[in-house]
Length: 369
Image (cartoon, rainbow, N blue to C red):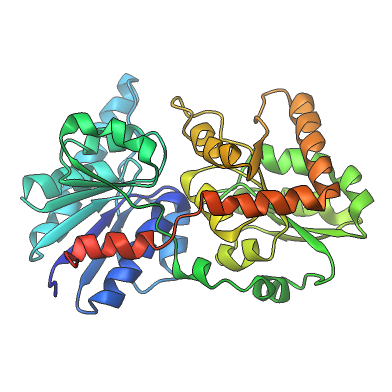
């Protein structure tokens, strides 16, 4: 068995950190003596997620790349500082393996690992790799991807690519839908709509759903809402629900998404790679509102995988609030009314859901056949 040290590098969103945790948990399960360390960003969400685990982590000050002269100078300085902090940890370990999991924090760590002669692996869970992963692929020995369509973006670099799916935490394999309902005081006789902007929340999703509370009150007898706002928007959203007739649990963050989605009948949310994988694994019909400001439109391509299977519909996060509101209500009302269609969409999730990716990747890292 392995006596290696495994350094996971990435962060800024739960979509980067959660799959890394899933892999790390499988490594420790298979090899209890393995050493695990995380390099993450200084965003609050990174520490919040990792503080609930037993894994050690280091905050790196790296920031995203920019061509603006003032920001370029800052980027370069913080990149070098992050390299120095990563080098101190990695150089002091034996048999280091560095796993980049996405985001600008991953780049300095993977570069250091490459220069120190460590094994460098890359996890790419979006259909199309982001800027950091496009850079890191030149240093990687192996890439793990969720979708077969992603292979084309790495073949030119000559790196080995394995299509293994999205690494989900163990909870998704054995989720109890009643657990979250009991914990949040929900009505077991009502259907549940989950609204989420992912780990950091979404102002536009929050605003649009809140603007529809008058319409949603008409469904108060059959439906209830769990609205995850993100930390910065909690107070405003909570206040908007104060006069709503429909039952609702308004939260800034909820860690046990496996149980929450297992008990959900419909979800409105972003379509980051992690979100798409979670909707599919939970078998829940979804209305995807892809984040509209990525230049490479990552979340649109992720959502397309669910749409192609018949498991989701897409509502564009349009800049015009009125148009966005009307489009969302058209799709939402149709699904609130149509239980058969929701059931068909939930069943279609099986066509997308991958199983056992975290264990498969962990075995690759541990070199277990």
